[in-house]
Image (cartoon, rainbow, N blue to C red; front, side):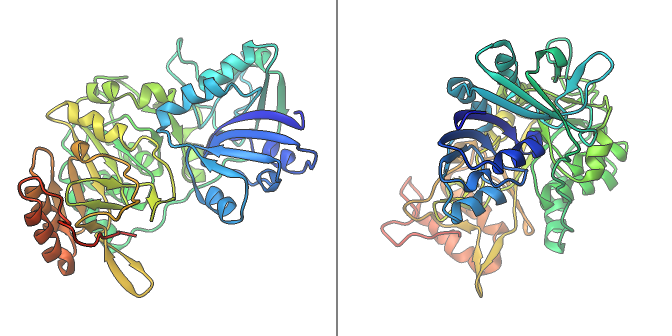
Length: 433
């Protein structure tokens, strides 16, 4: 790579670890621009003052870099927009992790299809650009939906092939709390036999998957942005048939995977799971074509209108938009489909307990998902069904699943909002974080 250059990398488990570490050892950068999201590799690259990193999703590494004063910015884009944005940026160098070539010379893209698949192919075809692929036997060989979506690159397409021993970053599950288990029980009630499931990242979605794995219902399908430990558990419990989906029947579909080392081993040569580009997996039309689609995601806070904050805290970037809105909007297109937002009713800030369900947000709050797309909200106190409800009805439903200490103010806010008025009615706002 040149001292002044542009580089595109996949999200998280698609990032080439040794290549990124090697770039971090150089000190001759004059103007390097890197486009990526959710760092999953260790590197000193982004501590260089002449390296700028544009990220579409913040994780722990991004937050640490930002707090340390690194030259890092956030691009407000959902996961589906990563592909056209990267095509517009057209980095001269594209780099990815992959499994070693098979006997026919195909290098599986392993744990990530995401928004970079098309740009990897375009870089391979352009003599003015460079395609770098780092392979390792520690990356599982996974599959797409051939012949159109091979989820692999041919060796003769690759400009630089690095043979290494790197491993994808493991993300083991955290043991669920009693509160998480209560949330899981409430959420599981919305999942019928034969449902097609999407689950997000985190302890609560994994707890819900575990609850479903031990329950009586099954014959599930999987159509999920992320393939997780919880979805593996459902497969291992014999609960997944993919027989009644309506979109990519017969196979679990995801656009990337992240989880434990056990998950990565389980995915190796596993034809029960297919990886597809994010514009296919996260398409709201594709999501809606699935039968009995049930999506399970999280949030940081919600107000009585149903507005959701899911990726910022006090207006500061915490994570990213990802597929949050896609997997809430998609199920709303069919009557039998449901989208669940699951979170603990409270959080602690210092010695103070605060509610995640609030009367209203303070000025400066950044809304992730608009109120008109939200369906079911689940806490340890129960479930609130918001779709088709007035603001007053939403406030009452949300108050019923809030912590008892905060219910009265939520009911009052709903009463003030009757007739379409703003619930604060001139009063001081409230923040959830």
